[in-house]
Image (cartoon, rainbow, N blue to C red; front, side, top):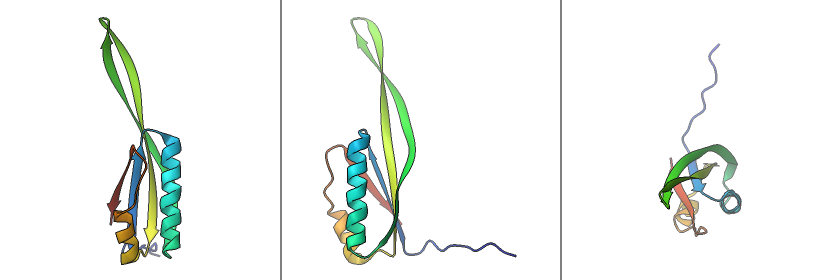
Length: 103
């Protein structure tokens, strides 16, 4: 028996990232609500692993390490309309939040 294969046609993935998790959660909830208002089904926001990097700053001859945490969320949109895609391109996000769309 062959496993069922899901088609990825008609699916749009929105990847949202920010350094502040609270602002990211608000932006991802707003994006999902906007998509639902246009009639698209949504999966998410799905929390993705946090990317941590260390930045060493020299202060008074001593290196002081600072940790930067990049929080990410994914929102899958099923059967998005062309109006929804146009609205996502013009979607206003808070400062420090970035979004990328992938088909």
